[in-house]
Image 1 (cartoon, protein in one colour):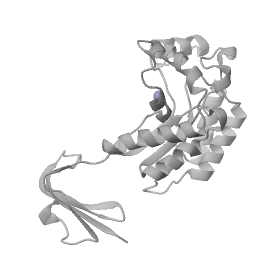
Image 2 (tube, rainbow, N blue to C red):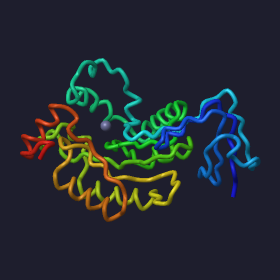
Image 3 (cartoon, helix red, strand yellow):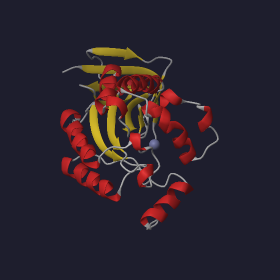
Image 4 (spheres, rainbow, N blue to C red):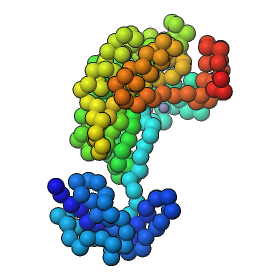
Length: 253
Ligand SMILES: [Zn+2]
């Protein structure tokens, strides 16, 4: 059991229900869990580790609820500038199709380092393409190196251009294989316990890249395994129009 005392912050921003901002305060934590927040007078006087926050502002860590780490590798591609969502995706798919395990690992290291440097302590990542042997494991291992909590969302695409979807044939997977690997990732990495560093979610990509059947089966898998379900929905007018034309429904239905 280890304890941590951080005190003397110029301002401690609690973000609690009353939005308290405490001058000359800090917090006391045991095994990574905060037990006391308050002024210096409210805090224990000793701990295994003591941090002096004089001259600093202390805030809760930021939580990033949606990201695509691999896109860090393709910022500002000219063909994708000033495009709508679908045009931007179609400009990038051929480039992303050439990624492999190293690209996934390196982009995750870069993204997680950027996040950590800007105050993020927990990020999700929606990874929905696995070309050339890439796996969800590649970004999970990167998160373990950086030390940021990760909710790794095992994304997927199964409806390609040939079947009326948006992505190229080379970037989609077989639906049975998607579900099998999603279950493998959950059984290998998901930690349901409080304070978990790694959790896994099931994340069919979008209405324009997976079937209704995969959306349903993914939801059933997530419910059965007790993990989160994640996707994109109604990203812009094109996405809404596609869903309406293909499935006869709109976000209000
Ligand atoms: Zn997204």
